[in-house]
Length: 382
Image (tube, rainbow, N blue to C red):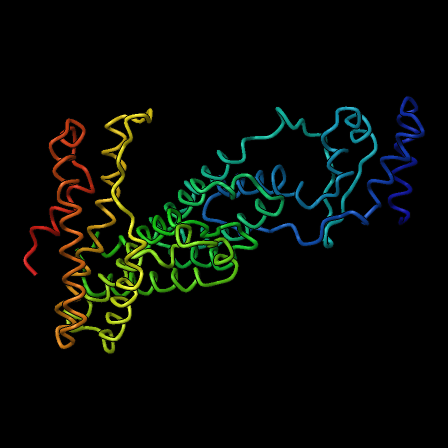
């Protein structure tokens, strides 16, 4: 312990005679002990485009990230009311990787802003690339303490949605690549499909011009590569939980590659179309079926329609890819024939689901994405 700390301690003792000798010794022990300190540097955020965003990030850093780097004893010192007076009179400093933090009492129930609200408030303020470049470190800091936030699939979906819609798909892909640190794992087919839709929807918004198709296909391939990473693949213990063997997901890449091939702007793309087509055919037994409500289940008819509307939306892209790839691979009659067979089967399965939703009150209430997507594919002349 250096002389500065000793001087601070003695000044505190003279100023607070009512604090017991045991409490003073205890607080000094917390300030100098590094045995139980959690390793690592507390993430430091880059300056952003707005002071308000800087303030949100700093609040997250001090209130929700710093505790993940303190020892149990230091966190107890901060959280327990019995140490509040001691901290006020006798400053305690935690030195983490060369950065000093003065510990202050924070009531764990009322003294902290909600981490989820703060996080999404911060994301809403991110406008420029330099703002979004703070996202990997922000997620890393929150995840270090096994944050319940990053463990929630809905949280990961919303984070991806905000970042991709802002135009920074490469940043969210980097977060997924660093999933051990950030918590952005792809641990289920539902998460994988949500991310694939988000990463490729720019092509749809831009009417599938070649530039947007190329971007979307590159992102789809990156996502599929990341699913092969052991950090994500360890969650895929059987076919039902493995997004890599879901034809609906591979079908999205098949559709993009086929569009690019038929546009004539994609050197060597036909080989990718063939590879994706073979993977779709090889994984066909894992195709998800439309959901049917059991009479004994307490699920409304409207909920059944909503689930199957999502199913139709996903299957429509696969169906379109199957149709387009037949033209691309017309030089391979056997493969093209297999693709046509699966496309016909899919239409036979999807048609009654479409009609049931279309004729329901739920389907008529407002436009439904699944209905619109299926109708567009069904009526398109390819």
